[in-house]
Length: 288
Image (cartoon, rainbow, N blue to C red; front, top):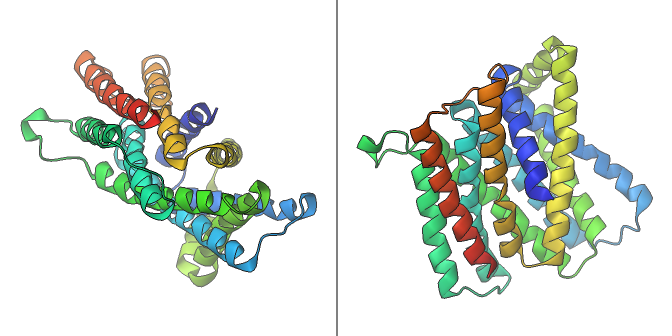
């Protein structure tokens, strides 16, 4: 379920980032919505040791910080090019899981690294006459992928010795703590966020609230999957969201270009399709 929900989330993010809100406002409001995790204390027996709580909070902060380069990438590139780049987190997560959690690397894993990296490189190149020049989004998502991979490995490590919901609450509270720190310690940033929110229309505000609810659902589903299987495999399967984003962005560009407008000529779509196919092939190798 997570790849489908993430695809919806990514398309909402693109619309909101391009038409209504800045990177700062998008990420800070996402962090603040995580405060609903406080309600979790009333619903579960919160038995997380202090050390695990602090590690979970740190993981949530790391996930929050990864949002900044992600939203910035959406502002400078098409969503159907940005989201496949997220699959760089699959090999990054696998290496981190091998180092910190003892998950084993195989020859198929190395082959998957090559396919995923080649696919990510291909989709980030627009002009084949300048093959060595990749888009800014490539570097932004690489930074974001390192952050989300670290957060996922932290979550899996905590799940190995703690129950799910206390860990989930700690991670969400970490996201809230990151957003609160931004607002509390910088009056300039606080004024920028509140100013944007005050000026926004009712429709934009409602869409932002919907986005944050969808985001939390996607985050919870992803962590439930991490709980039930190897973190490297979970992150690999979540990469199928690239396929759904390409379909959604192409359909919107063809039939509702006022919402999302991307280049949809045959050459561009074929290049994107080949790149995503390479990435998905690499993901399936990771799953074996």
